[in-house]
Amino acid sequence: MSKQSKIYLEKFISRKTISGRIKKLAKKINEDYKGKKPIFIGILNGSFIFLSDLIREIKVDCEIDFLKLSSYGDEKISSGKVTMLKDLNCEIENRDIIIVEDIVDSGLSVNFIKAIIEEKKPSSLRFASLLFKKEMSKLDFKIDYIGFKIDNKFVVGYGLDYAQQYRNLNAIYVLHSKN
Ligand code: PRP
Image (cartoon, rainbow, N blue to C red):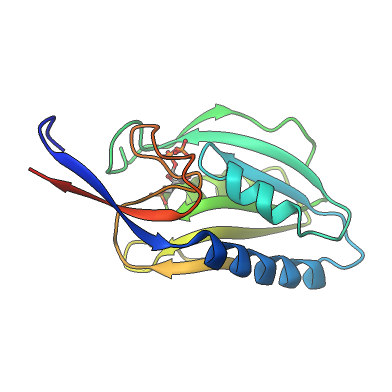
């Protein structure tokens, strides 16, 4: 995007719709993990709002930790390389793990996460993502809990950024740019 381009945001998914969907995802997770004590691992930064809303709907005993990765830097297109900026603080061997992402776009990040988590021998590993780009994601495994499957739009808000901005917006917007 050139420095001259004008940015405007178009409301895409409302706060109310997001809340309703998160309650449904949490209900399913509560059923699936009955009697278990999963560890939710939020992938920073983007997942922090989704994770905080999701976790408050979780009724089973659980723990939380974070991994910090970066693949986009300040760009709109993935650099194609995932870097780990913060590792886990907990032991995950023989534990039930739920990875929490804001968006699965190219699938690069979740592929990377799957490989590093599986090395640590958890007893189970599942993925939750608020958004899933149906045209882009090239995965040979499924994302178990998906909030919304979306077309290939650049979205911001509710944790998702463009050049670190817009994470604070309480709904999801499509970011457009005009020259
Ligand atoms: C974003 C997002 C996901 C990842 C998805 O992270 O939060 O982790 O990209 O894209 P992919 O499926 O193409 O890998 P980003 O690297 O932008 O860092 P951020 O979470 O701090 O915004």
